Every structure is written in C-alpha cells, then in structure tokens.
Image (cartoon, rainbow, N blue to C red; front, side, top):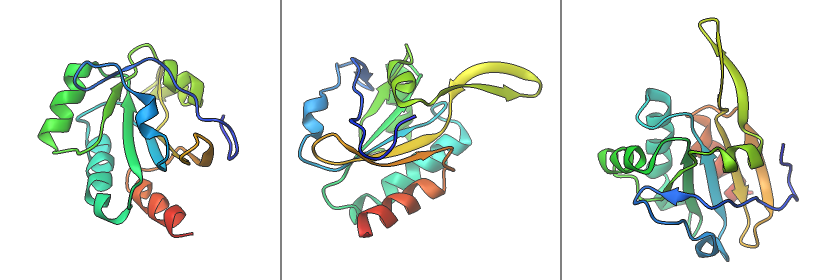
Length: 150
C-alpha cells in the first residue's frame, strides 16, 4: 500500500482512445488518480460524475480514472457521462497492483480479484500526498476538495 511521501507508480497503459497514456503530461500539476471497479456501474458512475462536477473547483489539479475495462468501454463511459478527464484501461492490472488496489473480494459467496475503490492525490513531482483506500464514490470529491483546501 502506498503512503504519503511515496513516489507514484506508472505503467504503460492505454487511455479511452486506445492511445498510450503520456504520464509526462501530469508533471507540474497536482493529480487525483482514482481507481474504480467497472465502468458504467452505478457506484462508478456516481464517483466519476461527482469528480466531473467539481472540476471547476480544483484549479489546475488533473483527474485520471483507472479501471480494468478495455479502452472501448472506457470511451463509451466517458462519452455517455461527458467526463472531461482521461480514463485508463488497466486491463493487465499493472497500475492496480502497483498502487495496492488489486484485491481479493467476495460477493454473494463468490471470491474473485478486483479493484478496491481508492484514490490518490499526487503532487506535481509525482509524490503521493494522500492515499484513500476503500473510499466511497461520494467521498472521493469531498476528500479531494478538503485536501486541496488544506
């Protein structure tokens, strides 16, 4: 698990348009990277749209969403909800594992591996400022705004 002061990991992943994500584009700006289990599900939609809705209140902070969905699913999710930030397709779970959010989960007695909804605020030099594991969809924008105001 990452803690404040750790260097934020990177991995070669595609964005919702199928292009290699340019991590260098985040340098110099605070960035919220949030992990969600699956595009277009109720909780994930609530979280993504809530972050979209606070985009006018976060200054130059960038937002990046990550899930194991393929680029086409990410694109459909972004377009349907007018999401103004990149969604990364972590289909091999490289980012999820590096951030410590690829976990064993259980639902209706079935055990499986999946994303533990989490968010990370990273400074412009790539250092983790805040790590919120097991964050709820509604708390993600609240925690971001609180951290930026501090």
